[in-house]
Length: 140
Image (cartoon, rainbow, N blue to C red; front, side):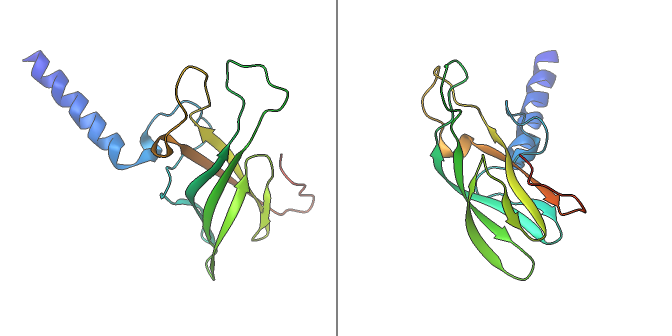
């Protein structure tokens, strides 16, 4: 009987996580909910970011010593309330938009020398938006 209950709990937990990537624990997505390619991240009522395609992932693997930390370039659809645009987000540079700065704050999983290149469906992205204030400087 305990084996049946354990199997049922595992099945229910997996099904719940499979429906929304925000609920999946992904190493590297620690500060915020992360979304997969094609899923929308609502940052406020006038800014929704949807990752579309990883154009570049040149991050230094966790186990390596690199001169440059690398970057991720992400093709992203931005719904701005009054229009929809497609931009290229750079993990190292915030984008000035809609009265603030949008940045690609989290990219998971982190690159590793222990496994093959990351499959597009395994990526998760976290976005952060910092609205302008009296002394707002670009986040970074």
